[in-house]
Each structure stands twice: as structure tokens, then as C-alpha cells.
Length: 557
Image (cartoon, rainbow, N blue to C red; front, side):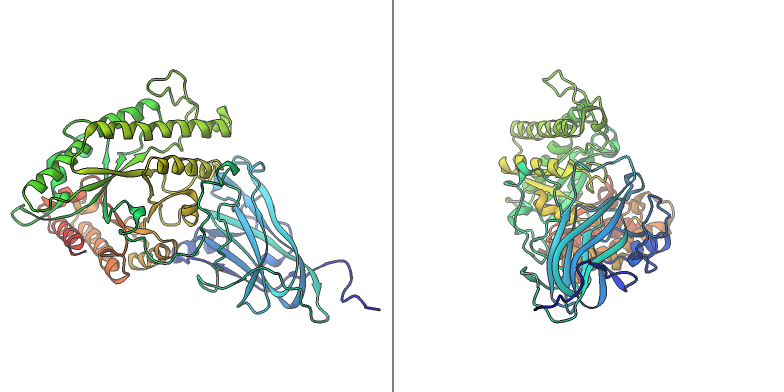
């Protein structure tokens, strides 16, 4: 007769056991904030239930930094049957549950096996009410170490890590039959090629069009990659408010099209890409969108001025093949107005507000409005007959996915499909720590360029932030944005101008030392509104130095 190894009823194995919280992309600034406000004091394996109150000490708050793991040491090899972790959702406070939670087990913390996953149920989602949600897996496997892994959005609040099962009294071969995973991204985060960062966030109707390639492709997104549209250096151009500040004429573009020497003579081509964005916060309405496109394609300014500037440069040099790739913004819809208005040629108002139209109808109306922009851009571009420009693609305007709109991933994926069907590319420049960066390929983005956001935050060490950004870019096969603070021209204090130049030079030197200069990575350049134009003609030595440094950086690469 074979005696049972343990009693039938599973035991709580994790109570008061030691654990470690891992971070995929550590950032000292984010870590200090989370530890100051919602610290980890070893409370995750305390079985006491947390409440809906944010200040309940049972919660541990995790701020951004992408992938997070919690690894508990059970003390000895056990048969694990159930693993669970509780999350808080309070969208108004920036606290959101993950799209999917995954569970792993190991005997030695070196080789790990997947034992289950729990995706979010979109029907449960509630953007207005604080809610508790438990993610769990039920799988019989043996091991000493159990890991729960997920991707944080803004804040992830976690509590009550529980592992139920039995302490082993003899050896067992009950090891999961899943591929063994390695800690490819560091000991605190497992790279799982089967993992889907979006969980169930995309509609099933889109599964045939979304990317299913989840292989780990290390290295920067190089300009030679077809997904970049042949762009190496892309400047951001803000326009549309009909003021001199953001009305671009031929003379404004000339210092950005070619490097000027001390006599203002063009000596070499500069930017080979231009991203056109709305200036300021454009009203979300059919009328405002149509007005912006009218301005963008107006004669002698904006696109037409850029085309003329490239032609002027080419006529005075031997660079006959020089052409600028243009990317045009799909306006953001996060404002969600009920009265968006009727698109030109139609009579029906589009309601973009989920509260009045319903989530699915509002999402469909947003898609209709954005597809109109895509069609209108193509029609107007064809009618313009630009000789020196090419339309490379469209740009997704929000710099992070919405925390409160569960329909947005499916909307982005459907737009990507429509853009690709037209032979165009889809571009995105997410902020540092943005929601959705880890799933950009699955969403359908072709060129992703990460903003370091170091130029605008004096509390951030620029060199360290650029190092982290470079690691992110290499891991997720993206480019990096170069950023110049507007103080370089607009500050009356010379010390502020000098500080702006110093940080900017850190960007450029880091690009060289970290390998995303030259042709190793596609780059976008945030230069405020006409900052580089002003620098080219500025009386201030700091601004002059910024223009010279930018020109030499681009020309040398």
C-alpha cells in the first residue's frame, strides 16, 4: 500500500516567508517615490486582506519601471497548487491592474518554468470605481521558489501574495512540461517569448492582423531597417495655430535642411525626416482637425515651405538625391467629446464619449474620425505633388496608452492595419515609462522612438536616464529621442541657457558613448518650436553652440 505524501487539504505555504521584488528597468527616481509613499516593508506575505484605501499599509505601490516580479522563497521544495496576488484599481489615482499576470516556479532560481497566466477580463473593467482584483493560477508543480510577474502601468498596488500546496516529504518528478526560461533581461525579470503583454486587450477579430512574433530582437532600430521609412534624423515640427511662432516658411526650414557655416552658406544636409504635429492642445473636433489639415497643406507654409526649402538647397548643391521623409500626426482623442461634430461631407455628429455613446460605439467613432484623417492626408498629399518630399507614414499622438480606456489597444491595432494596407508606416514616440512600450510591436507600431525626458526634469541625472533609455531601446528594438530645452533661446538668465546646453551636450555625448549615434539608431529631435532656427541666428553663445553641436552631430553621422 502506498501512503500519501501529505494530507489532502492544501496549506498556506507563503505566510511570512521572505520574498524579493524585482524590477525590469530600475529607475532611481521612480524607486525613491514609490518607497517614500507606499513602501515595501515585507508585508506581501502577510495574509491580512488589504482594503480599498490607498493608504492601507498592506499595499505595496510600484511606480512604472515596466516589468515587475515578486519571488517568494518557500524554504524547501513544495508541491504548489495555487498562487495568487491581489491588486487594487483606482484609475483616478493612477493605479491600474495589469493586463496579464504570469506565474513561474523554480528549484534553484536559475531555471524557471511557466505554470500559468491570468489575463484581465475586460467585462470586469471599471474606470470610475475603486476595485480589488485577485489574479491566480491553479497548477500542480514542484519547486522552492515561486515568481509572479507582470508589467506595471503607472502605479501597480499589490498585496496578499499567497501560495497554497503541500510540503514535500519525498522526492517528486512533477515538474511542469513547459520550456525552461532564462533570466535574459537580468535576474529580476524573466524574458518569456510566449508572453503577451497585452493579455486580452486586443479584440479577437484583430488576432489575425496583430504581430505574433514575440522573439527577442536585441539592438537599436537602425535606419536601414525598412520599418523606419529610410529616416535617420527626424525633427519635430509644430504648426497649426496660425501664429508666427508655428508658421513655418522657407527661410525657417533652411537652417534645419542644411548645416550653415558662419556666412550662412549651406554646406551639408541635416534632417532627413520631419514629423508634423499640432501646436499646443488642439481641440478634439471635426472642425479643428480639418482646419489643421488645411493649414498643413496651405501654399507657401508648412509642407509646401519644407518642399521648397529642400528644393532650394538641392539647386545650390550636388545633393540631387536628398529627400525628406514626412510623418503626419493622427490627432489625439483622449478628450473624448460627445460633440465631436460631423466630418466634412457628412451630417452626423460623432460621439467620442464612452459615457454617452458606450465604450464600443465611442471607440468605433474614434476609429472613423482617425481613418478620415488618414484618407484626407493621402488625398491631399497626392494632389500636392511634392517633388522633394515623400510620405513615410502616420504618427500616434498620445505619448502613452490611456490608463482609463481599455478599448485603446484594439483601436491602435486596427489603425495600424489600415495604415499598413496603404503602404505606409506607423510611428510612435512614447515618454520614458509610458504604458504600452513593451507591447509596441504587438500593437502594430513600426518605428518607436523613446523619449528620455531628462532635459525637462532637473531632478533627473541626464547621463543615468540616457543610459537606461539606451538599454530600453536596445531591448525593445527602438530609437532614441534627442531633446533640447526651450531655455536655450527663451531664458533671460545666461545660467539657464548654459544649463540647457550642458544637458543637451550630455544627450549628444551619450549618443556617441552608448552607440545610438551615427547609423545605429533612428532618432527624433524635440527642439521646441523653431528652437534650432532661433539658435542658428541667435546672439547668445549658448544657442550658437547648440546649433553647431546639432549640425556637427548629424553631419558626422
